[in-house]
Image: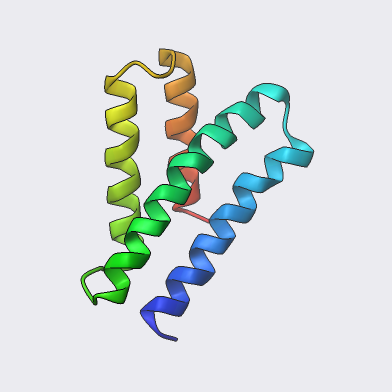
Length: 97
């Protein structure tokens, strides 16, 4: 299996996990998942561009890109400390799916 197909499979699995909160999560869980999902979509698009140019180790690049985006958002106080902690926990769970 190529790096591209592994990345697509893994990112689709992550996206499905985030989408699962639509039907199964509380309102707050949906908020946390939706917040992360927005950052996730941007990170995936950026990593896909790098893959096309042969510049990325896809999953580790996705993790680093998403981590950097979230850290910047947290530094800008976009979320409360509690919500940021919950987003971080969900983020970490995506990479052990």
